[in-house]
Length: 279
Length: 282
Image (cartoon, rainbow over all chains, first blue to last red; front, side):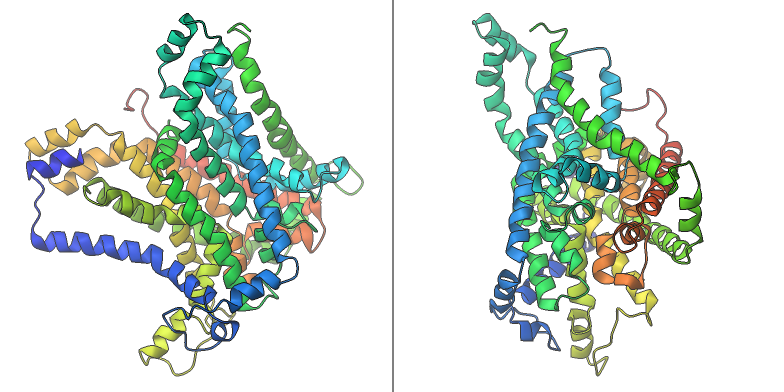
């Protein structure tokens, strides 16, 4: 649509209109980037600078704040817990979600619509609230305050996305490819492994990364369900009232970095994911 | 394994998982909310919660915030989505930059805006650099509720516009370009094309984006905790306080159900207002 419009030359590109257009694009980019840059300045400044006034608009590349963050009691454990929970969430949500995505794309079965409804229902729900009753349930089963228990809850958050994303990925691969493999002597399983899997592996990786980010960023359930084994978000939240500014900023920055990398890694799939989620 | 049973085997893990960690906890939370100390059915948890002095304030704050933030986000996301759809060069880069906040947690977003609004922060630094103030002001205090509100609203707009943007960009991509070509032939202006083609055909995406965003808006928690602390009570923060500080899980469950009720009510309203006529979707 875009190309046709501009190549037809129908769009009235007066230089004034173009200037407004370009400057608003630049402005909106700045609106996103500048706040992150401010956080970067604070992270790369010494604790004294972070607490002083006025602020410089350039980082002094001092690692005092980050060092303070690393040496703060319990912080590295929290970081480790965050990574562990996110990894477990990533693995579980793909292992559990992908087969369902495959089933949705390849089979017509009784109850398919009911199943889709169940998946969609989870999205119209303030899911973190379910951490409250789970806290009781986990104490009864000994899962309270464990990395595994929390990752179960985060997997619940990530599964609807995993199912919908893998559904769209599998739908993009023609059934004929699989059928051809069957006629050449493959079983359903070996056809899947040799033909389908290599084709969708990048997409699966993208949705796994997405699951990782969902877990990494989650605050409420993490804060409710962990006490000793806090994740980074829960730990920072717990100490918001008492921790010094440079600790908050360094912690916030550590939270942001994976997000920047991951969004970059999955950017190709971002729109496919949400495009399908619209249906 | 034959293809009659196979699909059920494949969806079984998800079904079991969602039954255990979605449906069952939902039943539990409803039970908790309606159960008294003696184990009998009662509405006392709801009475406790609603009669607490903080409840009307946190309800008002949550709704006000949603009312201020969501329309701005919708307008901004629509603007950005239409801008991107006209872009040829650099589209990928611009989209990447605009979707960065999608990966940033609400807590991190709160901390980012804290760097701007705290007393020795960048807003004060800018103001004093321009000579507008002599000493840094304490912006996030109980004396300036409006600034606290603005800071939280800005952080929310900054963080969560991206999710709407992505849904709308995906939705615009589904609109056949022939409609626009036809509109061009008949000499419709860009604005008219937006009102007559983009907007109506985008309705399913608008629905999704609004439902998702409004539900998330009622869940606002960590941004507020980072920026306002106790200055700006919201429903989700009260839930957390009941669970942790007051150790009253019955009341926490009651507030949770109230949040759930509000979310469902708004979802239904949005679905009604933006109803897509049967057979009219692309």
